[in-house]
Image (tube, rainbow, N blue to C red; front, side, top):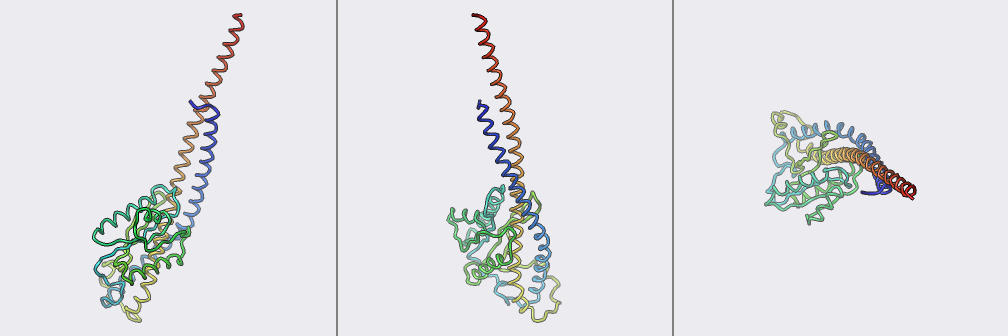
Length: 286
């Protein structure tokens, strides 16, 4: 059984760890509060833009924009959005599994990746996946400038024919304790058919084709930006939950260690008393 001094040292160590996890939980909670409101506020805009795009596509002539043309799929790209750091429960592992499962589904096509976040980048490099770009150090509250850098690379790779399809892989923020891995096709554009039905009677000025030229770049920027926002909210939520659980576990461990400490101290006291009584009896016997 460990001695009193060893147990006391262990209690001190676990208490220090508990202070760290509690501080990390509070930091994650503050970051989540900042980004959660932005995510909620940006969703209606993203949904409305997708709806408007579907209406315009229904009115435009077929094949009027390169991002609307579906070509034979020979190469598929995945934008994998993970965190730069760990200590977030299964956040990164779930995303990587989702991306690998989707890549396996495209068994006949060549595959490549764009890594957003250090954890995903490191995994792809370790497993010899083909990287076409990496973006590390995304802000805790993502900016439109960061989204434009990523969408700019998407446009370049698609127009040059490097990829015939490109998918976003990210965690959608559902609640503090729940995030949902999402696979979403980014290009070529595939607006919801329901949005296209009955929309051909709309009038556009200038032509639908001209409106598409202006709208599609904004749409791609917004889709990437929304994915970054959802991913960051999910990351902060996962880390906050994981650190809360770690803090509680440390508290339980401290209680067990204190119990062991008291037992060890009582055993030492009993042994000392026994030695004193034994010594006294020896003196009396003389």
